[in-house]
Length: 185
Image (cartoon, rainbow, N blue to C red; front, side):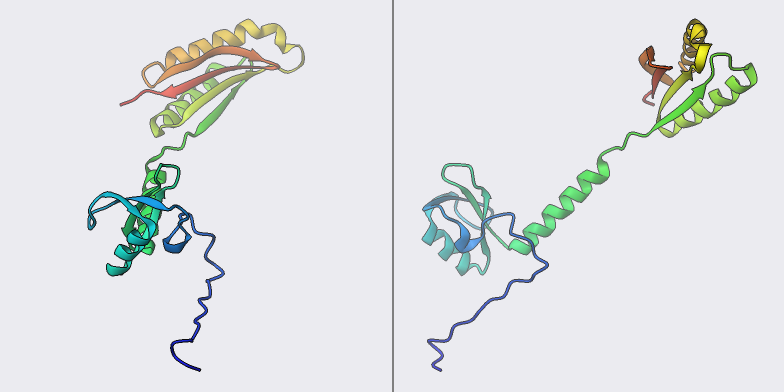
């Protein structure tokens, strides 16, 4: 077979998903706006843009396909994907996860139990977790809902140095709930 007529078949790696961006010949626009460090910015025909990318031995990557004309950049596509993954990983690490700890009371909780749960709530708030304190009413104990409300208000008042009240005592079914968020230091 002649070297000029030789056809090379490029096989895709099965682990690679479909590309997120149109690259090189997959770009369907007639004209593109080129941006980047190593090229003069402006609107080019797709053939000129591909030729420029080939001269620099880099890829033409469609960054913003919805723009008119689509915005492309001449870069190494693998390096571009790596930088994108790195950026999203950093953003994920910076985002905070909200932890909500629950503390359960009965309508007639003793002082000793109350102090014990108060100490735990202080620890949770210092760690940065929100605290959801609730009084659970069983059977006829719903008659003591005023006592439950007083207990939760006392709890919120005792923790005012550590937390701010996000939700005042509210009766939901058989539970009366108060939500506390840690104060910023």
